[in-house]
Length: 148
Image (cartoon, rainbow, N blue to C red; front, side, top):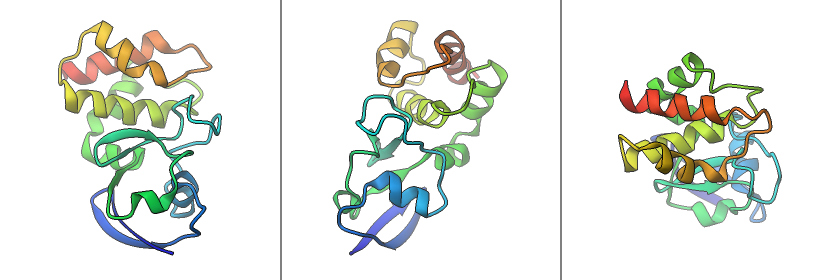
């Protein structure tokens, strides 16, 4: 099936299987930032934005995205490089598996509220798990991105 997306700001037409998940299709397009961590939508490693909302791309069929704007971690890197820089500068990067989803979610949060408090950061980021227990440094990274 043909799927039309606005992918990281560019209009694209992708030929995909009807049963393909968005994560698989993105990775096939060379956008490998989003990772499959759990495969059931609870870890946040595959988080992308679809029409501005964070979603688990491992659960979303690509056909459901036809006509939608999709932003990946690579897109956030282009749109808001200060977020990735803050993660690097404030040690929000650990092993890297969760980082793309963390960065995408942080971008969505900062678009919603450019200056969130600690409680809002904790609440908004609750769907992004970090196995390296980097939560304090992830929060510091988001605070720095908000302030810088």
